[in-house]
Length: 477
Image (cartoon, rainbow, N blue to C red; front, side):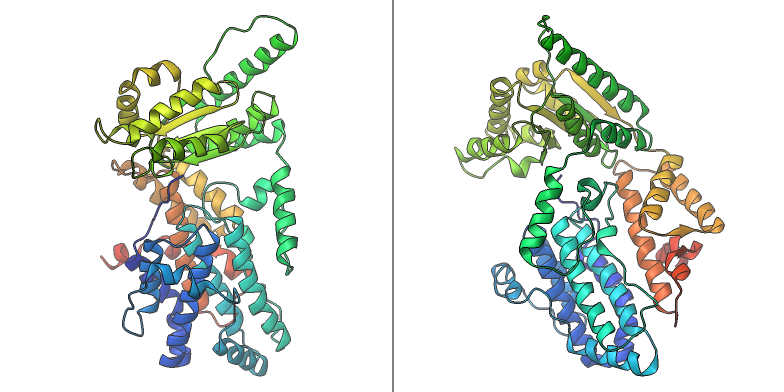
């Protein structure tokens, strides 16, 4: 899945300062500078765990750092090197003072800081579309070390910090849920790698995957077609086992629909189902877009595409926005990627399934751009937009999974929000992604509200009020 930046660096800076204003007021300008430097380093380390720091990450780091000092011009190479070297997480000096002050006064500003930090880091991790295991483990390490300081200095333990491993902000199952891992405690790197390896080797059963398919909101026609396809493949396998003839059949598919309609989720479930019934050896899903297949020089695209195909053998190659491969004209390297993929589909027809996905109109043009494409893709799945009721169901699910409770008034406000979101949708409507954005915004507003409470209870941390769903700019109007 290509990186999706749901906020600009400037928009994130507004969210960041809204979360940190209380601590700026508490400690003054000296603490503000130290807090900004600390948060910048945390963000850079977090992004380095998630696959590397890009120029966009650097721009966002600038926005964090620039509140109380001139905006620096970070050099990308320095961010990926020296800034991320050394100890992964070092608690800032002001936090020790904060914890000691809490111990003397019986207050809990240090634990409020942990929740604030967790919210910000989760938001930063989710900018790359999902919170990976490595990112969640880094956030856990941060919160564990801060919590240990609280415990050492005697701050009472009535409020537990948020658990990052429970807070995956996308509509997908979290890494922990998908691989049945337990939340990680402080331990060595070898212990973490062993846990991750054990989780990756344990695959969900056929019944578990079918339950995941059934639990998806909407998509009734897609679910029915997937079940029919799975039944067909099961019968084909039985015929093979009984030495009966099996007519040739293309297993490659086209997923058409707007963003956020569940295409990647269904592809992941389908790859697992095919592995469970023996159609595929491994059942892994390899997700790419144009940037993962096309290189910038003659002769390199075929090699780059072949490497991706090699990783997908035994499973499913999922190409998002596949039409971008044919949109650059006759001399575009994308056409070389298409030819390489077509050859692999023929050479590995029993070992590889290719799913191409994207908007309906561009996908139709893409398939007609090459005779080989039309002949190899004969199964089409259409993913419709979610209506207001379905958007609300997704939102409820995210709230439940992440430990938030909607009051009766909040439920009503949310229903109105998603009904209006659907009825006024534009060509850029993001479906489930828009729901995720709404959920993330709600978490930020609710956190800002709760952070102002002197002694918030567990219920305060969970409850969502109508004002937590209101956009500040709309409210000002």
